[in-house]
Amino acid sequence: MFSFDFMAANVLEGDSMEQDVESPVTILPTKLPKQAREDLPKHLSKECTKRKIQRYVRKDGKCNVHHGNVRETYRYLTDIFTTLVDLKWRFNLLIFVMVYTVTWLFFGFIWWLIAYIRGDLDHIADKKWTPCVSNLNGFVSAFLFSIETETTIGYGFRVITDKCPEGIILLLVQSVLGSIVNAFMVGCMFVKISQPKKRAETLVFSTNAVISMRDGKLCLMFRVGDLRNSHIVEASIRAKLIKSKQTKEGEFIPLNQTDINVGYYTGDDRLFLVSPLIISHEINQQSPFWEISKAQLPKEELEIVVILEGMVEATGMTCQARSSYVTSEILWGYRFTPVLTLEDGFYEVDYNNFHETYETNTPPYSAKELVEMASRAELPLTWSVSSQLDQHAEMDTEEESKNHGEQTERNGDVANLESESKV
Image (cartoon, rainbow, N blue to C red; front, side, top):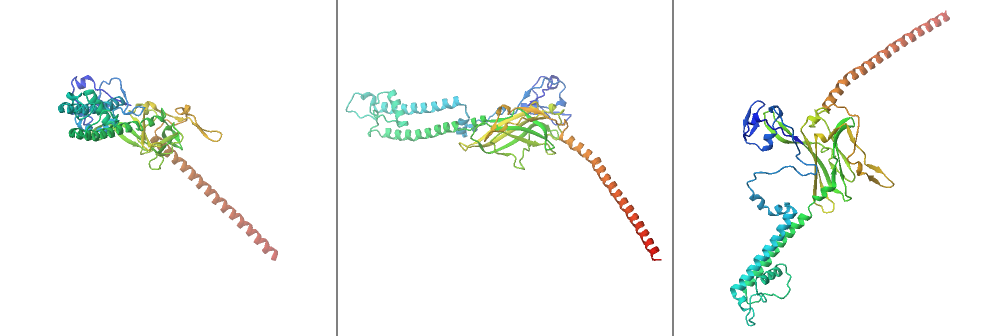
């Protein structure tokens, strides 16, 4: 989710001047995308209208980005196969039918034209006349013969004769072109049908992300699961923080992408997704959430995009599922409800609790503040412990010296008694 701050009328003055931020003070006119013009820093706005909630990636994984003013449209035609595969089903089926129909009509017209030029249509009832195609008496029959030739049906009623060299050449051309059309269109339909996009529908993400303590550290967590029994092979997870920023030089970068570490260095990002898993991001000094506290989180304009990738076990094709979390969907001080239980001889996953969370005791401070407080609290503790150890050592030394003195006095008394007894 992003809040796009629209400039007030006294700033834009009703015209379509496009502006960008070059420094905190000066505003220089330049040409920028619409999104960059609208997402200007808040300190430049005098009168802000109601913020508009806008996602970069929707919850179903579709990217909320539209490409406009694309002038080099010929690039789509250079990769016509991918263009056809990316089309919606209704357009794909329409093109599929139209290609075959136009091909049959075109070659049917050529067959009719050959018969018309040779005069076959004028000698239909003449038994002594040898036509190019027997039993071809009009455009309809030529169209049917074109269909039979290209689809290799071969009913046997209309056949080409050996007295028509132009017809033999046309038969070869139509057979070759027909095979090419079949390979192209059938291949396109096969790839369209076997696309693993629908497999991502059974890969689910939790509705909310949570922030709570785990192993004494503040962590951002979300949950992923697979509803099918056929698993995702080589599954991996990654996350991106989408947040606009302004550099020290005054350059405004809309929708800047920052990596969120979800276990890349430890291998925790590679998943064995048999049962739902909780993905954890430790908030440390390298984390973009290092200085964000519970009170500051609702004020942030950010979006977390999570991407789950892997190969479909049944087809071996790569599948990708996406989702996102905005600030209102990040719950501070919550944990996910367990969904895995041990039954008689197997584990059972209760997906009714997949999105459920429960509140837990979590400090409202940022990870940076927690580290600073822990460091301040550690110094007096260390000092007191060391001082106590020193005091114990001094007391032990005094006791040892006292005991040594008493032992010396006893030894002296014994020696005096021995000397007196000798006398």
